[in-house]
Image 1 (cartoon, rainbow, N blue to C red):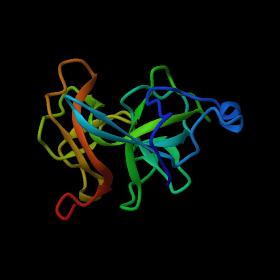
Image 2 (image 1 turned 45 degrees about the vertical axis):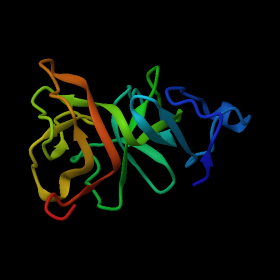
Image 3 (image 1 turned 120 degrees about the vertical axis):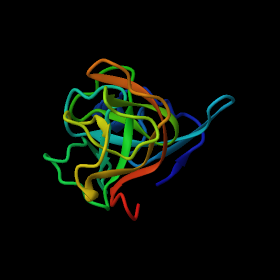
Length: 172
């Protein structure tokens, strides 16, 4: 992974054509930005493989930087899977190039029942987290909700990310 110091634009959604033309980051490119109030944030460029993903969607990131909405039933969790939170300003369709946040203060889709400071797992909907662990291997390690999710079915909720992945809730 090469780190970009300039030119990164988390929130921007690119097409494959724009990537071919050099107008989009290479898959796997890292970008770091610093905020005076929220500190450092890190992002990785990914290619969306499941369409219609929105801002805050939890995605699995494969070795080739293909990003899929994380869902325990659809793609069984692997400890090797890197996770990230999609940062997009518009809905990302299949084959879009976008940024997934992997470190720092962010926002994630969480179910209404998700609790702050609790161990997270996958919620009922793909790409949404909930609190309480269904099975040890489905625990989402490296993401902490810093506020309660809220009252509606799915909420964009404040969180802190520290290179998230699936793992055993006991051993991390």
